[in-house]
Amino acid sequence: MVLCRRNLQIHHKIAADRLLRNAYGNRKLACRAGSRPYGSHRADPQALEEIKENAMPFDFKKEYRELYMPKSKPQLVEVPTINYIDVRGTGDPNEDGGAYQQAISVLYAVAYTLKMSYKTDYKIAGFFEYVVPPLEGFWRQDNVDGVNYSDKSGFHWISVIRLPDFVTKTDFDWAVQTAAKKKQLDCSSAEFLTIEEGLCVQIMHVGSYDDEPASVAVMDEYLAQNGYANDLTAERLHHEIYLSDPRKTAPEKRKTVLRHPIKKA
Image (cartoon, rainbow, N blue to C red; front, side):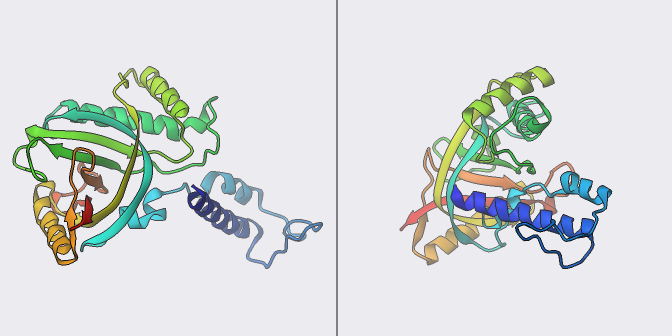
């Protein structure tokens, strides 16, 4: 994806330039071909070391705000093809020690194995440091139009964490095997998943997960007023992106991106 890589290059150049200015002092420094880089000024060795240690990791939430930081009113978005780590299952996500909670453990084990791969002997082509993206989920229920939040035991879910574009299936397979061995955890349920959601409507829901129907109703009203309709199918699913840690955030303050695939009415 050319646009993605160009954004990454700009991101890292800005971070590097800022650190270099700090290392050499806030002088106007030339770096022309044939000249001594940054003039004759000597750099602070400690500051130069910070260039390696403190360059900001790529944060998908900040770089792709249109996907992760919608407003609290509905908006349309064209979601590109994205690769994920996924684990599938059924049942109540709130069940203590249940399948959903086990799936989350597997997702994060594989995700952090890939994130920290640069500190191992395994090298991923094109790797850059990044923040592990937020947990996401695709949800459906049999014979239900939309989501019935009162019957959580009937959920079919696909829990996912986004992968950077440079992670290949081969890299993914290495991470699954490495995570299983290092964490003594069965990671065989993890899959490499590619999804192209296409045209969607989304909204930032602030509040308890059980209060999501109110935000979904706002999206539905927006669609009806603008000539669109939900396109929820077995392949195009109700999608949630969890921006708040439920262990640390009160229910009324939790932020969740709600997203539905849509079509022209």
